[in-house]
Amino acid sequence: MTAKLKLSALDADDLAIVSAAVQDALVAVRDCAYLKEEGRFVLLLNRFRWEADPGQEIGHTRTHSALVFNEVTGVRHHDIPTAEPDRMLELLAVVLENEHSVLLRFSAGRAIRLEIGRLACHLGDVGEPWPTPWKPAHPVE
Image (cartoon, rainbow, N blue to C red; front, side, top):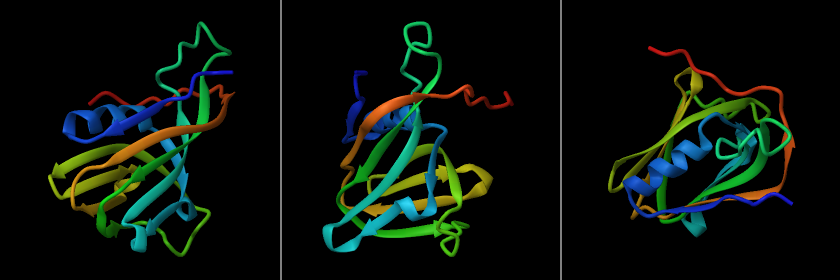
């Protein structure tokens, strides 16, 4: 059984660590949900395990994870194909823009902005990891 990642973010430094952990995560549009009555925004991710040592394990791995933001008062999005629930999005970064705004940046210029009362974010792995032959790579600019 592999150790499951469990992180919380209450400030910008914490969120930078969460962002690094979820970089290159895949999420279906249908797996992004704003639970307005609960003040919560949830993403169910297919996360690349950057923290795993490929020499100690079966190579590169992915796992399912839940990324949860509490204290959410509103959600706006740019170019998220909400009419295509099966469309996969690639999460690139999670950034605290200011004390009342978190930006989720996806590939292809897509974004979700969360309006928050305060930062209260949690990331937790769910289930066991599985092998993947692909390690995400980005061109150096």
